[in-house]
Image (cartoon, rainbow, N blue to C red; front, side, top):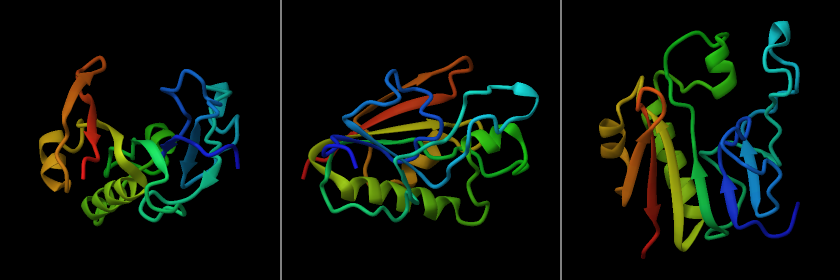
Amino acid sequence: MKKKPLVLDACCGGRMFWYDKENPDALFMDCRKIDKGYFPNGWNPNWCVDPDIVSDFRNMPFPDKLFKMVVYDPPHLHSGSEKSVMNKKYGLLNKETWELDLVAGFKECWRVLDDYGVLIFKWNDANIKTSYLIKLLPHKPLFGNFTGKGGNTIWMSFIKNN
């Protein structure tokens, strides 16, 4: 493992929003590994999922309070074909357990977050509305901002203030 990381990206996927995809202050985790060239017809040939650690966001292999910041960008959809490009690229939630899974993931992110640390939660409410998701969470965001072409993606910020 690299030096003690400050930031955990708990569902790193293709690290698409990272400016430095090899940032030494970050530890990249995902439940899957996908090699370059996965998509047919040369579409997005350099895209891959290459986490530092392969692990499930609902059960992380880290001690409590290890990270100063945690980025939580879980899959946003619970419907559609598992073979679709969208679901292959971003992951797919379980139709029956998605609520429990998202809350369990949030609790794990909170557990590994140090006191006064910051949790960034990225969500797209095209399938599951943000207002519904927030009601499920054990903590409320400080603030958030909708972005994207359709304004469906929100970045929410939480602080662990015990």
